Image (tube, rainbow, N blue to C red):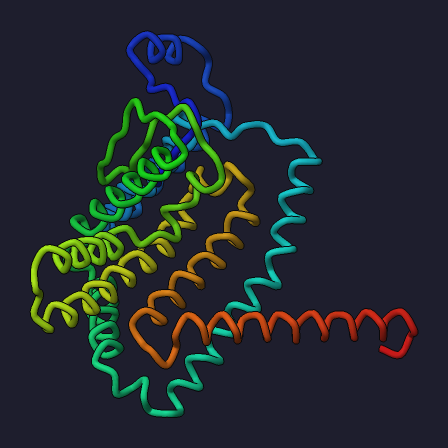
Length: 306
């Protein structure tokens, strides 16, 4: 799907001629055969859109992108970092569900219009996604947002974008700079939801907006947060070079952790019973409990009483 290889070079006519002259490797032949098999199967099932994405990914994974070589030490460091982040994922998830359940029990959360407009947007997008209506439109919108997020991240790190493209086959960005944030930001930044919030804030500074615009904003954020989450989950298993660039395991852990924080921030902003201060205090308290529990387990293992 969408990828941002560092210093990616597009294949021109000269390169294409050179590629045709050399003998194809076994992996290339196998990939092309696999793409043709997908095409035949999906033609029978009348699922050409899904085939189109899969076939494009299978082809570009060999011809347009090559994974950089990684040594054992690099892979070991990535796995270690991923394992170290797992407790933070647990603490964030624990805190989120704890705060959500506490707010729900007081009934204040369920009575807030902000939550219901947000939830309505989520349900609308979820139903639209599984119905398959306008699939090509939403796929293109997701790819466009994916690549734009790459571009904004590159600019934030003072990189240069020399070329980019978007289609139903996938997308790409040609850049002189890449890092883990640039590679993974589209997987945890709900761009269209964030743009809605920014536009609402700017309009609020210029005009006296009616209260109904707040309700529209919550519905918009819920709709496009669900859009971001569902399409991201749909895309991740489809051979993403963005994930392999920094190690798939580490990338997936970071994506989960970042999405958990983004969701918590959205709900904290929308629902005062789950404010940022309360969430932060509870997160620190749960981190202390987790550390205390881990130390207790280590002491029991050390003295053989576990």
